[in-house]
Image (tube, rainbow, N blue to C red):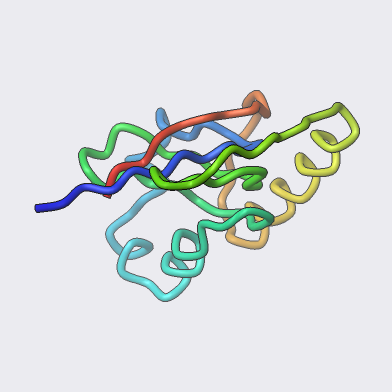
Length: 114
């Protein structure tokens, strides 16, 4: 079995502590869930659910996405972009009917293995 690695840079929320509450069986089997997780490309707002062992759940705006064969890319972040992404992510979560309360909005970099 071959495993591939993608690295993501997102502005968003770490929802890992709320994973079991947010990811109900009903949601995970819905068309809505597919829309939330299936377009993991730069410039999109997505939900990231750990496909291998369920360790994390992130939601955020993708500012960078690299596969294991990708070349070098420079990502520049500034406060005004972060504020814009924050508003966009909050609106998308509201549209998805996901209520998270008060959590820090962060720059998150992680690897996803599939």
